[in-house]
Image (cartoon, rainbow over all chains, first blue to last red; front, side, top):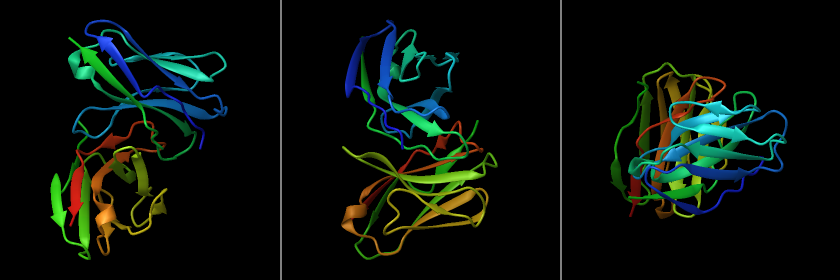
Length: 110
Length: 112
């Protein structure tokens, strides 16, 4: 499985943008980049995914580098409820399961 | 809203007992998954299923089996529970190709 590298932890102030980085230098051409997050005492939840182009949805934006060796999840305005572990996952095309890494623990300070 | 439910939030069992963890989803998803989550090890895939009566081994299937007799239900079975199976167990489901997986709330299993 292609590997991802994320910082163990990050901190952000409330109401400021947050940029969560992910390196995936061994990504293959057909790997999709997925982001999930896990709030305290809950199961993970889907945030966003993309292949080559930047993606936006109601939760976040995903910026993908032109060479696809890295990506950034952008939370435009962090709230206390965004404190969670954020997982960056590479998933090959086709019906394949997700393989989770350690993720980044995001703390949001009021 | 998609709902994935797990039979118990907390479960305490004794070593050697047979344990059943049940997962039900209400969105007619073909894919279902079982993970366990441990501190420092993250989420690890135990088994998954792409259809009724089908099953595939994940990364850590030893000591576990699964059953999928109906599309909406995926059961994880610990044939003879051991203390090293004390963990948080998470079930998930998705449509193929699995772009969005929906997770249940988890079952925290303690084996004493």
